[in-house]
Length: 122
Figure 1 (spheres, helix red, strand yellow):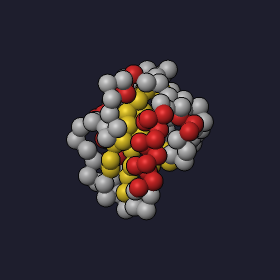
Figure 2 (figure 1 turned 30 degrees about the horizontal axis):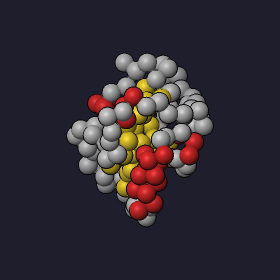
Figure 3 (figure 1 turned 90 degrees about the vertical axis):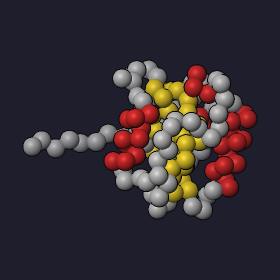
Figure 4 (figure 1 turned 120 degrees about the vertical axis):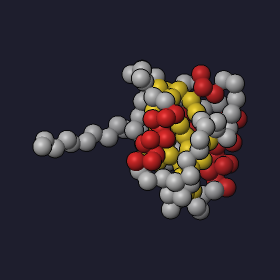
């Protein structure tokens, strides 16, 4: 189960027609809901990762959208994507931007607001 203070955070690209998913980066940070990634500057990533991430997002801006989401495990992450009807989800958590310290780097997710949802009683 995910710790309340830190969780695995996936930065990924999804096709606009929900036809495919590409995992770009896996880091740790405060848990957040799935949301569209508008700016990478707020994450406080190392400079080389930020440059690689910005270049991939820029090169694929017409057909792909960048998203960020936290999850307790990769199986939970895959299940959440399947629930939202995405296709061609990767079978492994291997990101495109990889490093030996990627999973231990903690990023700043305070600029992302947690969405509150109302629950209807039955």
